Image 1 (cartoon, one colour):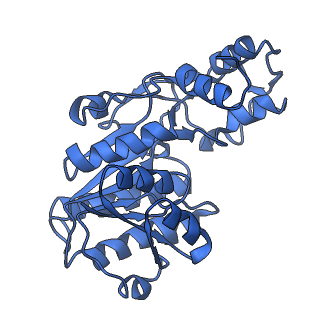
Image 2 (image 1 turned 60 degrees about the horizontal axis):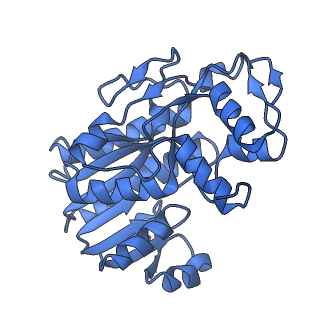
Length: 296
């Protein structure tokens, strides 16, 4: 397959390297040439354009069998609006004359605003409080409209992955805070964390490219949501360290923080994906070994 990866960074670059290893012809789209040598070293052909600028995209070839949009943007709501919403609209417009066989977009589980610890599936309401998450919902709706024939760009084969908190080499907020001795348990620590190892996210993306149904949404998250308290209890016991101190819950921040248990049953059933790291213990255990924090 001729594959385009939009956003060849923490996820996109190793994804591209794996697809190259599998025998695909892979192109990586970045905003600038800062990672050109890394892309080439991985066997990925570099392309450069800003997804927020349709005119730049139109200068590039647009014949691809598979496309993955895993671009990442930080910052405020306006940056989200430009990179995710406008950027996705530009990608659809650019690719629509020669639509790919599959277009996979990595959204976020932050679109779920549930705050009661309930189990969340792809059929659960998406009513987030955070403005950035509302923009992600709007981006998803653009893709779903294109995939389901409700927009001028009809029959655009978009598949959406709602991705939980990504961890792996050099990534994982609570993990890194714990190792630095800076972690704190919020309130009683009962809020659920939903996570996925980077290597499993790569596997989920490839599964979505091969088995995902256009117009469908899949939760990309491991098999076991865990409370913040139990996560730190496991880390403390595993490393023989003290449990982090507690701090009062920030009530002002609560509107932007969710508490839910996200189900991956649809992804495992429909995409036939078997996780390398089924839960946080397996994933972070591997990371501790890699960092020489544990003996094999």
